[in-house]
Structures are given as structure tokens and as C-alpha cells.
Amino acid sequence: MYTAGLRVDLAVSKVRKYATRESGDTLEVIERPLGGLSLVLADGQRSGRSAKHIANMVVRKVVALLADGVRDGAAARAASDYLYAERGGRVQATLNILSIDMDTRTLVITRNNPLPVFVLRGDALLRLEAPTTPVGLRRHTRPVVEEFPLEAGLWALMFTDGLAHAGVRTGRTWDPGAPFAHYARQPHATPRTVADALMADALDLDAGRAADDISIVVLHITHHPGDRPPIRDMDMRLPLV
Image (cartoon, rainbow, N blue to C red; front, top):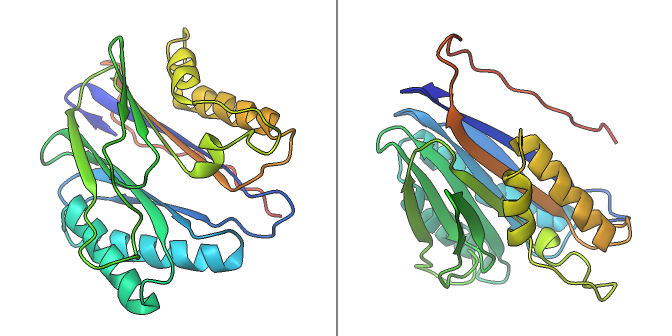
């Protein structure tokens, strides 16, 4: 995406829990009606098909509302109320929304997830971890919403708990924030190189067998070369297994 000399690059890396047939994480990307795009990431309770169904319910509700122009925070609250009404507060899902909002020209980060989202802005690594709760457990659950002006050099990382908890099974714990900043600061770093490096670290900590579903989203705002037309493109690799 191109605007005022800026471009957003993003990469996603996902792997399902070892020895399961289906990931409980769901990610969707949608263009916003007033310009920009949103990435909606949900992690259903537990893992496998039942968790996938829960995550799909939440993501579909959020995506439909965003497509109608509903603000991110309101969409997250509505999705929580919907899951609560459908399941009576018996199941939950974590929810993150990462949006490039061209109406406000900001990066909007919406969390219903105890895990942090990391933002790298200049030399500062920001850990966004204001207290919040997953969706679906009670009515009137509110997300935490934070915004940053769109500017070249801005990085963001959001993820599900499979990344944060990698290595717990083998007694090796980590915090992905510092590695994220390290990889993003490398010469010629891209969201793809950063996401791949973090996934490799997580799988190494899990001895090659993911202990939980892992989803990683990396976003970078950069300058768009002035001698190139603002062409949008997308690459995707999806193993058919």
C-alpha cells in the first residue's frame, strides 16, 4: 500500500501444534472502506478443530463489522458479546486487530489478549501490555486500543501464545521482544526475514515440534521509492497438507 511516499510491508508465518490436523489460530486481512487494511488474528480456546471454530466465529464477526466501517474497538466488543451470547461465557478467544487506518493516518492496535504487541519506533522498543482479557467470557468486555502516526521505520509484531510460550515444554523460556528488535534492525531487514527468524527461534525452543499453534504477524512502514508506480502486490505460500 502506498500513500504520501510511504508503503506498508507485512509478513505472516503460521504453524499448527505438532500432531494436530488443524490450527486453532485464524488470521484474515481486509481492506477498510475508508482506506487502509486490517489484520484480524484470533486464537480459540485449546487447540484443534473446536478451537478453529471458535476463532473463525470471532474473526468473521470482526471482519464483517470492519467492512461496514465500524471502528476497531467497537468491532472487538461486538465480537466478544456475540461469542458470549452463542456460548454462554463457556469459551474464550484472544483477539488482536492490527490496522493501517487511512482515515486517521495511524497504525491502530487493538488487543483482547494478555500477551503484548511490540512496536519498534526509532530506537525505542515499546511493549504494549495494558491489562485486557480475552473475548467471550462476559458481556461488555472492552479491548485496549492504541494508535501511532504512520511514519517510515515503524515496525509492529503481534502473535499468539504459541510464540510467547515456545520452549516451556523443554524448560527454555524467552521473550520475543528483544529478538524482534534485533532482527528488525538488521541491514536489509524485511517483515518476511523477521517473521521467519522468529518462527525458527520458536521451533528451535520447542525442539522442532511446536507445543502450540504459532501465528506471527510482522508489519513495517517504509518509504516507497519515488521512481516506482504505487502497485499493490501480495505473495502467499500455503502448504496443502
